[in-house]
Length: 145
Image 1 (tube, rainbow, N blue to C red):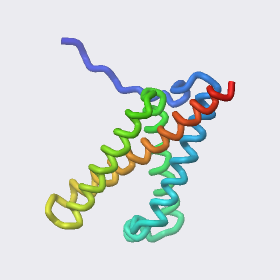
Image 2 (spheres, one colour):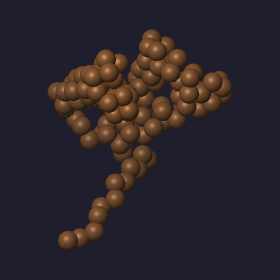
Image 3 (cartoon, one colour):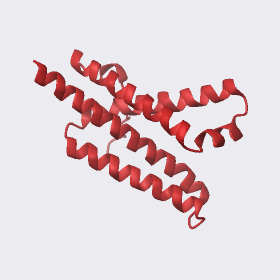
């Protein structure tokens, strides 16, 4: 029985072509827009204010979460190439995330578990939406040639 394989995420090599770099930029822009909308349109901002009352620390928390999502997305985006897969990824993770958050609010399930996995799955759904935008931009570039 051999050892274990390390999971390596080499962000610099996830997309080799120049068009893929542009597509990654599109995906990161979409992810940033989703992140800003999520913070502004939900009570997430109030929860983070409770944890981080300082504005500077709050900005650092927002930046850390966004950078972590972007790195995870850069590792995943080039691997999934089909629209149906991205749609099922987005709907699946989004539904699970909202279900866990609903269960945590309704107190029908463990609060710690739901508050951890709910936002994590919603973040995965946001990465899926950005991946779908990336795939659309790659398709657009291919059609323009």
